Length: 80
Image (tube, rainbow, N blue to C red; front, top):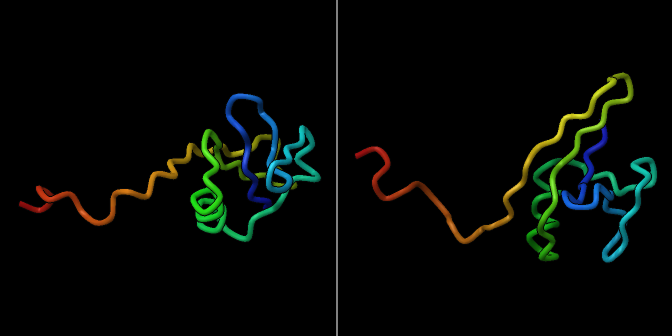
């Protein structure tokens, strides 16, 4: 399985900082979804989604991504 970042608006895949490609085969493959999300937060990349590509599958799994890390911890009213 490959873990890729895809720009929602254009459908292009992340290749390197400032570089995008239409070819998922040459896109950057992240070690985990957490690493991909952390990379986006660190590099202020937004408007992307995670794409899980499987060699034997006919369809990809596309996951929406939120990179806003301002919120940390449970809501104040949770568990009340």
